Image 1 (cartoon, rainbow, N blue to C red):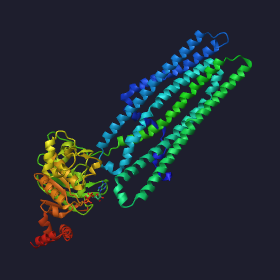
Image 2 (cartoon, protein in one colour; image 1 turned 135 degrees about the vertical axis):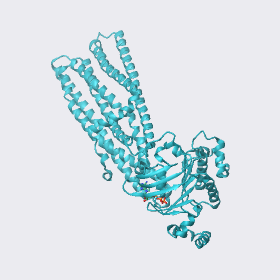
Image 3 (cartoon, rainbow, N blue to C red; image 1 turned 90 degrees about the horizontal axis):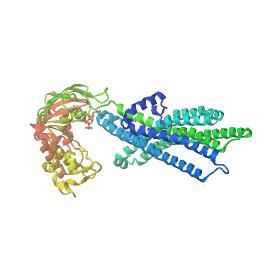
Image 4 (cartoon, rainbow, N blue to C red; image 1 turned 180 degrees about the horizontal axis):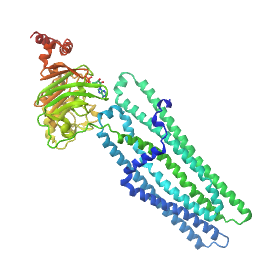
Length: 607
Ligand SMILES: Nc1ncnc2c1ncn2[C@@H]1O[C@H](COP(=O)(O)OP(=O)(O)OP(=O)(O)O)[C@@H](O)[C@H]1O
């Protein structure tokens, strides 16, 4: 099934693309350059010691490890020196690994912060298109790979240094044999090139599958109630298995590539090198006297010649993973789907709360208009109700007013000034958005009312709750205002969440109120509390309300009836009923279910 998921991502990245990604990632590591520089210096020191130690051993073996020639003093001297060298090497190795890991870790932290900030600058359009799980995957899994990403650079520098120094040491020991060892290098180069080329494709597809897996997981967790209600478990399980299998297949490809190319092939080349060296020393020994210490040192140099390259291959796998992850992270960093921009004018403040739409057109995708030529004016303190069938454009009108999306043409004015001339933070502060299903943050009731704004005192929080009659239920909670809120407030009822969101709005005292009327079934007692709270909220504030139950907006100053994004009727409850148009039909449809309202309708239409 994996081929179903193939996409542009799964193609291997060209060297040029990889170079661009690295160049773009460097600035994120730049603040921690000293960690990396010191790590490289330590790595140099380690490879230098790696050359010196065999030399020491060679001298010891060739000159002193002979019958009648070994004095205890000399043995102690060499042993002590060897131990000291190994100890210093261990310290340098610690410094190298620690600093490298810390540099990587700091970079990782930096990227995560930058990415999170960027996400908050992106507009709603971005979140409409990219699944939450995939964003999560980029912020967590993808950034994780930066930890080991830079190791390749150190490994490459050390490998170069080691290859040159060990070759020099081999050459000065036996030039002919050293040249034979050199003949293996092109094969190693070939393996490295092939691995680099192939693994970027494997890692790309692996990262993509992981992202899909996270998206599936996020969907399953957030939609768990619907999944259970509609018995979707089997479908979800099957889909999850399929994605999981595809991910497994890419992991398998990665493991087989790494297991084959990183270990056995390098070891094989090393073993061939060893055989060649021993063979040639063997041939030499037929004619000359060959010292054991020389063979020992030569084999050690050979080790130092191959090992750093093997390490480099190892780092290459982390590096490939990092480049692929980096390109995914940069894709978010580069995304231009920004929230609408403002061009604030000094001294622009919302003081009255007048709202005006002039011939506004708006589309989500730049092609299909969802608002056509929408015009209305709401005077300060007035209430405007938006009604219309589902998909008629009510929420879209609010989305434009809240600056969640940029409108295409026309004008939106607040207090007779272009909405774009206000500072966004100040503008949003003046809007109180009360949603159908209020979002609650992890914390407690008080923090959810003050919305983590410490300038709002406990007394103000309690006064706000009292004002909208939310205090009654809050006082019954264990811990009252400090009762815990977890999981978006799932442990509170819809009505209770509504009341908390009213208190939240009162505590922030906005000039303009935007209500998305709750459609959820709420018991009559809570319903009365909510209607009472709403009436208090609306007092003295300009209100735009999306109304589903027309009975709740009879007292609105203006009612706009929307249909396919156009205003088809405009008036107040009485004038619209008298028109006997769409509003009249909708109202009649709703009130035939409700006896009291039907009586009211009959009464009104007789007038
Ligand atoms: N994020 C979005 N991306 C693309 N199209 C969207 C988006 N949100 C809404 N639409 C489309 O815009 C049109 C108007 O939707 P809108 O949500 O404004 O309707 P509504 O009147 O608020 O409906 P409801 O009463 O069901 O909430 C619909 O055709 C809808 O499919």
